Image (tube, rainbow, N blue to C red; front, side, top):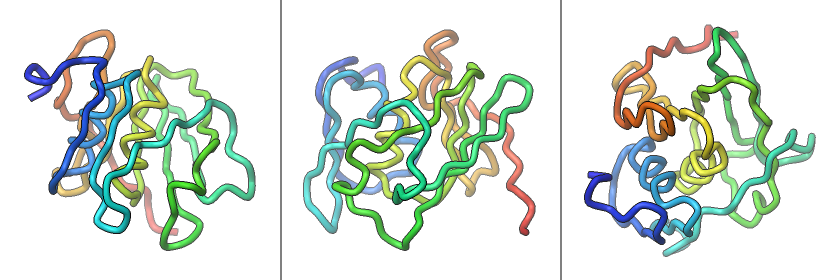
Length: 156
């Protein structure tokens, strides 16, 4: 699908799709804007995120686990709902590993923003239904859509 879309050009998506699909298209459009239709808000632009540790009062929590060249980011919402205005200026952690796996329960626009925030990395998004993480950005191997193994965290 990405072969049919212009790379680095503004893109917009309407309709249902898995989190990894939205993230892949948003990353493909980078650095140009990416828009998607949100049933609660209408057409929205995926917000830009900055590098650095999130503030303790941020509406999003991030736990980073680094193992064998892969950084796993468990991302959560402090409340059941987050508005796009609340994440303007949100910081995401700097990562030393070349591969980033993003996991959590997030709105589509936030998946898109996270995939764009890690533009220089191999990025995969967890898709629980397939029991793995789908690669949405890979600046070296260009293997978009391949699966990485993923084990859910043990319940605490």
